[in-house]
Image 1 (cartoon, rainbow, N blue to C red):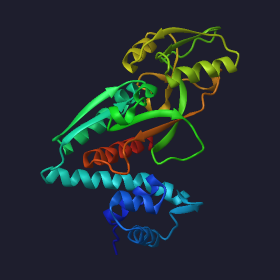
Image 2: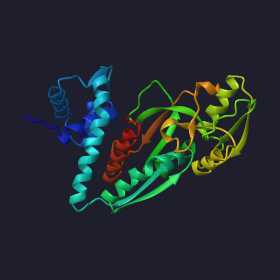
Image 3: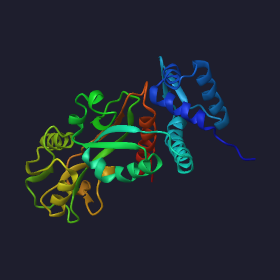
Image 4: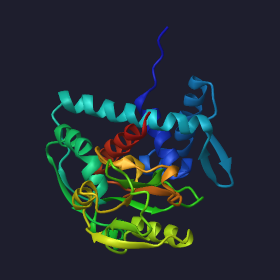
Length: 288
């Protein structure tokens, strides 16, 4: 006997997961708190597992809840895409979207392309810049911002996930006799730049910035010419470049947090749909 997961319950599950509580989710969805609690209990009964752990006043995803989250995001995105492939879209407007250049270049073209096909009456105004620049007055300047932040043990609703930072060079890699590490970086205040310099200084490795460019396309060109090495999030490394290994004797860079910031309490419908597409697309990018 086949069983089905109702879309409205999956949406409620994702909203509770994003906002960290039933009360907040009920306010965001325009439903009563008991109704949302009942949906979550029904979903847990259907899947025969606990999806949340309560820590103080906040709900945290359980291990199985974290397993379900990316799948639920993909199901919702596919559901919405099917409807808008066959039903005339009634969502319109302008979305001002700020994204770091490496995500704009490596990950988002296909995500935004699918979104534009599903919602042709929505205009996307894309601004590509360093995360710290995007986050300055982001509520006034943008409807949605994808930004990199330093990792923090405290979970927040806007956290999409964390990713490894890696050293990247061309296919030839780093010269084994390089006594001074040549860096190809974006200008300050780039988080990759500061992490690379701090890691090298802490390891006592001599380094020199040999090329500066704010855009991944320019950095990619310099890397392919063999001018030096750079730092990127693992998921955004372009094809044709090489992720350096422990054998290259460069210091560990740690991880970076990827956040998606918007008005999650009273989001515009078009922005909510774009958030679903971006979250699902990013999760697929990290899928094995």
